[in-house]
Amino acid sequence: MTSILLVDDHAILRQGLRSVLEREPDLRIVGEAASLDEATTTAAHLTPDVVLMDLKLSASSDYEGLTLCKKLSKSHPSMGLLVLTTFLDEHLVMSAVRAGAKGYVVKDVDTSGLVRAIRDVSRGGSAFDARSAAAIVRGLNAPAPDEHRQLTDREREVLALLARGLSNRAIGERLYISETTAK
Image (tube, rainbow, N blue to C red; front, side, top):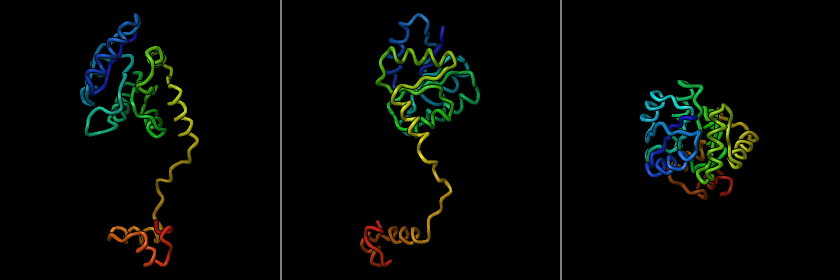
């Protein structure tokens, strides 16, 4: 029997997931949570096999689910973390995996795909739908971000003039460069 904690800020979605997943004889919903704090406390208390979570857990933050992944993977490394969300881009998928997610599925997945993903994660494997897997590949093939790159002196000049409200044309005239270069 696989125990599951549902984490989503929308009660109707949690109820729908419960209804669908409890039809499976080997899946059992042991709890629900609507927020980061509630999910952290509930997961610690129930220690489910799988936490099925959204990335967006409140109106004030788009990606609290990433914080939840980090917290749970650190405090409960054997817990299977499966993201079920509407957000899909390589940065988010890679961030979720780095935060400890073992799977990433987009909410338009069919029931059998979601059930398969839950079972795979509960067995210690990973689960990514085709689009999430493609996003990971794109993310792995992307050049590494140059996080320590500094602005050049010229870029700082353009930025300072832009901050004063000058247009691209006016910046170009002032610095003796074309409007396109200023842009």
